Image (tube, rainbow, N blue to C red):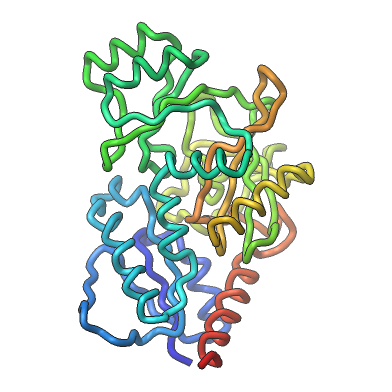
Amino acid sequence: MKPIAIFYEHPDWFKPLFAELDRRQLPYVKVSADQHGFALAETEAPYSLVFNRASPSAYLRGHGHTTFYTQDWLGQLEGLGIPVVNGTRVYGFEISKIRQLQLLQRLNIRYPKSSAINHPRASLEAARSLRFPIVVKANIGGSGAGIVRYDSIDELEAAVNAGSVPMGIDGASLVQEYAKPQGGYIVRIEVLNGEFLYAIKVYPPQGTFDLCPADACQTSDGRELVRAACAIDAPKRGLRVERADPPAEMIDAAVTIARAIDLDVGGIEYLVDERDGQAYIYDINALSNFVADAVNVIGFDPFAKLVDYLEFRARAARSSP
């Protein structure tokens, strides 16, 4: 079997994935998104399967040049008939919060009231039709970056005049009603191969928008977790997590989203708004960093199931004509 290629940018997030591949002695190669090239005239690739792990937050680590290039390389692979896990279609949603909400609109799935803008001053007109507080979210963000809350139109206007309203690296942002999570937590539903995998409640510190579950330090009752994914960030502020059992309609919504965009593996996040008691989906993550210390939180290792899927896809590609 040709090796599985793991196309990635962050040096530490995928250590558990590499460890599981090593444990099974599956052939794989690490392909750095940071320094990469390909021949446009190539007619085949040396991989049985490519797993796309490129991150929209790469620009925060000085790797912003990978963001749009990734789409081009994945398209090259797909044109050659190489199967890609979380390929071009999914990645297009990963790097556009606007596109995510357009999808939810088409699927008739509830999301916070929002407008899209391509200039900071346009946020003022957009905000006048929204209920404060609001947030402005960079269209390409990741790891909670590029999200700022404003409690009044005057506060937003001051930020516009100061030139501090966040805009994505593509020049676009969302202006969105801020929903305070009922119970102080959001829910992240993980899906794999179009099916529900598990769900967790994430309790963020107040005012925090970075909800990476691999950064969790403890359970909701204060028990310390063994952090295996974001190794360089071990002293992270206290994200707390616990297993969740979402209602069937939210699991159905997450699965519907995954199947609609061919999302092989990812997380769909929602919250229940404290003001009206309604559940709103607000983020679709194709870059899935599974919860820290998963065995103790959810009762099994999701990386084992992920590698089961990668192996299945790679072997299916080998046997296809």
